[in-house]
Image 1: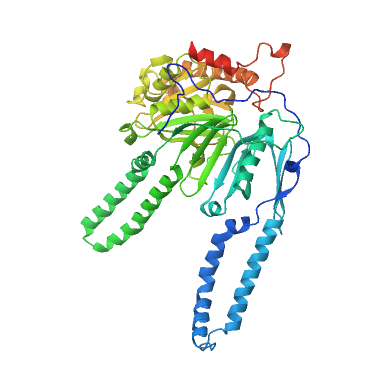
Image 2: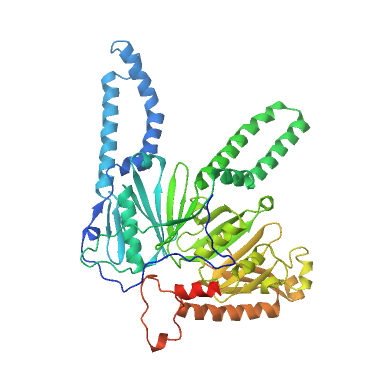
Amino acid sequence: MSAAKGYDDGGAVAPQSNPPGPAVGFRTGPEDQWRRVHPVSPLVRGWLAVVGLIVVFGRNSFDDLVQAIGTGGRHRPGGAPVWLILSVLAAAVVIFAVVFFLSWFYTRYQVTDDHVRVNSGVIFRQQRQARIDRVQAIDVVQPLLARIFSLAELKFEVADAGKSAMKLSFLNLDEAKRLRAAILARASGMRVDPDQPSAISEAPEREVLALTPGRIAGATLLSGITVAALVLTALVVGALLGTGSPALLVVFIPLLLAVGAAYWKAFTTDCNFRVAVSPDGVRLHYGLLDTRAQTIPPGRVQAVGVTQSPLWRLTGWYRVHVNVAGYGADHGDSGGRTVVLPAGTEAEVMTVLGLIFPDPGVADPVRVFTAGLRGKGRDQGFIHSPRRARLLDPFAWRRNAYRATDTALLCRHGLLFRRLQVVPHERTQSLSLFQGPLMRRLGLVDFELHSTAGPVRPMVHHLDLVSARELFTGQAARAASARRTGRPERWMEERPAGPDLAGAASPSSADKDNQYEQ
């Protein structure tokens, strides 16, 4: 396992970037033309349906065909003639071929300076369009069958797309990488050669850390799957001892298969996990059978959540999730796409946080974030629940705390399951305070910061009413100020200087590095 420094005593490593410059308009070139996906794409997408139809409807016909051939062309009473069976098979092949051809022929895409457009559908036509400047993340996905043909699916999320991300399925792997580079270049406002606007090479990347298969296997065994398996096993054994009927062991078989499938899915999803950094942003590579190369451009992370379960206290591992606009709750991929570190040590967590938040807004980020991960009380300036909150949180009231840095709000809570949530000030969507009858009696209130849809829900439980009001008004002011001085959507585009922006210019990367070295 290799790792690079993120937040440490000497500073933080910020993603490398090319010198920013004004964006140059792209001339009409190969990227702007309507193009088709790879001809094999319909087969890669629909092979499972073909196999299912063959299994369901073709078994009896195949048996009849074999028996007819074995009897010299005669068919058994009630069976279908050989010529009819062969005709049905030929018609099925022709129908599938026509459907696949039409699906491929009517699927086209176009990449312009401002939009990505995808047209698809034969009977019901669908035309989709996404603004490039709203791109939040781009994934290059290779299912197992696509890897055999050296194909890949390009999937990108935009801020207003929700779960319905746009997909290009499937492209040649090199074409998918080149197209990803072109979209990110347009989204970043990067300077390009006006004489060769389509000659955009993929940005280089530098590996920051990698997790071994042994780490992933250990994290899977110490996950909630094992706890659920032990509980189910205890129930089955208890019922067996109570009734004395061995027939109950039949119930254990599907449970065993379900647990095995859950273990396999968790391991294969996170296997070969690597984190890299490039001018395009943070890149994640993971997957055993189905591989994914995920790119999150700078400034697209809305919130970060670091969690540690009781079992992981034994190993010191943490799991890091992010909220990214467009990913949503990510139920379709079992939350895999929102994970930026499946099982990392405290040092690796600091590395990842250093990539996502190159400017933590404090002079000593290691101590501050460590206090957020496993600290209690007022260590490093955290403000926690008052003593009277012990009636509601007898053990965790000193863990429920927050701290605001110059650039982000840190929310800490949980005793058995430790949680730290970090939200950049400019990504604050809205704020709320909640107070129930008992909390009103005790003068306590819950604070919640609303982010985009995702696994991270920043909140602080049972704060003092005065402290909660100060946090509410202060965070609203910090969010408004940060939005005025935050980085532009086109992260490699120079912001124009002027009298109205003279006092609101954001610090450069060099200034941030100097801040870390102080």
